[in-house]
Length: 388
Image 1 (spheres, rainbow, N blue to C red):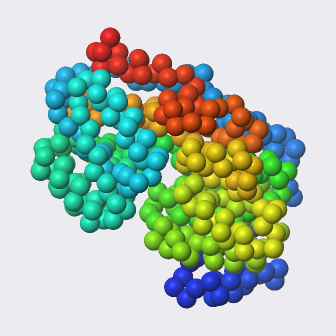
Image 2 (image 1 turned 60 degrees about the horizontal axis):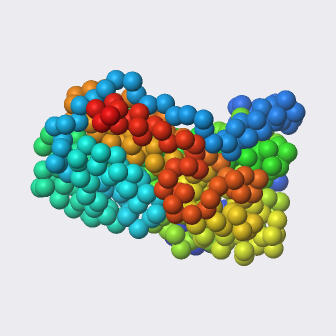
C-alpha cells in the first residue's frame, strides 16, 4: 500500500500541489506498510472476509449490553449535571445532550447545556460556570483534555466528577475516581469506511484520506483508517491530506490539489461528516469529479438524506447517540457513587445506497435510536438505577 502525505500550510494551495506531486510522483518512494509488504494484492478470501465485516456493519443490532451491577443515584436527585459540547450548533452534539438529559430525568436530575463555542476560552468559561453552580457532574464532548486542562482539573479538585465524551483516554490523564471516559467506537467507524472502499473498489483503490489534525484523538481516528487500508487493501494507494477545523477555508484547495496530483483518485474518505461540504467543493474543482465517491463517519440526518439522494456521498457511518446518552448517565451515577465505570456497548451502523431505504429519515427516527436496533436497554439501565 502506498501512502502519500500532505498538509494545509499557510503558503497556500500552489505550494501544496507541488509538494504532493513530489511526494507521489512515480519517481519517488512511498511508504510501504509492514502488513502489506510483499503482498501482490488482496486475496479473494481476505477480501471476502472484509466484505462480510462491511455487510455486518450495515445491519441493525439485535441487542445491546448494559452493566450488571446496580447503582444508587438517589443522592443526585434535584441536582444539575453540566453538558459542555465542543459546539452546541452541531446536531449530533445536540442529540447526545438530549439523550443524556432524558436518562438523567428518570432519576430527577437536571441537565444544563453550556456551548463550548469551539473556543478554548468559552469552554473554560463553561467549566467555571459549572464549578460556580456546584454541578453534580460535568460531561464534556469532543473536547481534548489539554484544551481545557485548567478548568477540568479545577472541577476535579472541587469534588466535581468529569466525564469526557468522544475522546480517546489519555495516558497522561487516566480515568480515576474523579474522571471517566465514555466514547463512541470512532476508530472502528473510520476503519469501516475504509473497508467499504476496499470492497467497493475490489481491493484496488486510490483514496484521498482527509486526516483531521485538531487533536490526538482525531489523529488516532484517521490512523485507524490508514491501518485498515494497510491490513486489508495492499494494492490501495492512500493520499493523506491533513486538514483542520481551524483551516476550514483551505480544505477545498488542498483536496483538489491532492486529487489533481493523483488523477486516478476514486474515493475521498472524509474523517467526519462536518468536513464533507468543503471536501465536495474541492472535488468539484477536478476533471474527474463525477467518478469520485465520498465516505465519512459521524453521520447526521442531513448527511444521510444527501446519501439517499444518490449524490457523491456513498457511505456514512452513524453512532448510536441514544444508547451513548444513557450510558453516559450511568457513568455519572457510578463515578459519583465511587463505583468502577465499565466500558459501554456504544454501537454504530454503516449506511450506503444499499440499505439507506431501510430506515426512516426523520428527526423522530434519528432521536429514537431505531436506526440501530431495539431500545429496551433503556429499561435495563433504569432497572439498574432502581427505577422499576
